Length: 235
Ligand code: IPE
Ligand code: IPE
Ligand code: MG
Image (cartoon, rainbow, N blue to C red):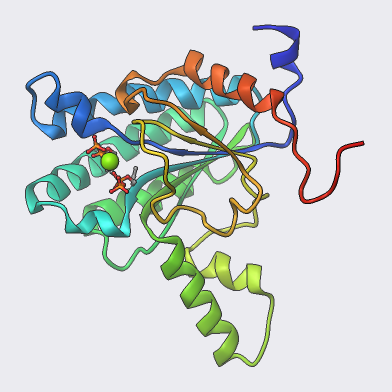
């Protein structure tokens, strides 16, 4: 850890599109679901490093609304992993003083997942070291559309409040500073379209199961070298 890395901008919002689980598994002759299992270690290490680096908010894309289109067996396996992992991850969050919340639609989640989500949120509500947000059944376009409908139906109102409500965010968070996508693709796949207006984009060919705290540090270091102008000119 260099002095440069220690002085990373705070409070910082990092978002990650955790992609490449399926290809990681396929290249090893394993079923795609083995990649989803393997990605749990990456998640744990990334979260630990985020706490150490004093990142304020970490939003992780775990399941997009378009992911329902995958074969039923894969969707079921993913939902089983979520229901099984949420309680132990929540316990870890309590120990590390992390607040865990879920963004996205809740009405289509299977009951065991929804219950695990609600318990995890309740258990970690007082966490202050990091706000960890897991995006489940999340679609930025769907959220933006529903926020716009809410504003129209109510005459007027605060758009950001409406957007937060549309994807069930429990508190406002800063815009994304750094968006990381693993797995080599260079696209947003309907993730945080509004909040990424001025995000720095970082793409890595590493599949998600190969990502870890050191690789997060590499991304944070690259971010630190970027010059952000927000439409203005540098002085
Ligand atoms: C990301 O990995 C995890 C989810 C979308 C749930 P993928 O499953 O998309 O893995 P690839 O991109 O097919 O390798
Ligand atoms: C985005 O990855 C969703 C998650 C990582 C949860 P996808 O694998 O679903 O995205 P595309 O299909 O490559 O755009
Ligand atoms: Mg993918």
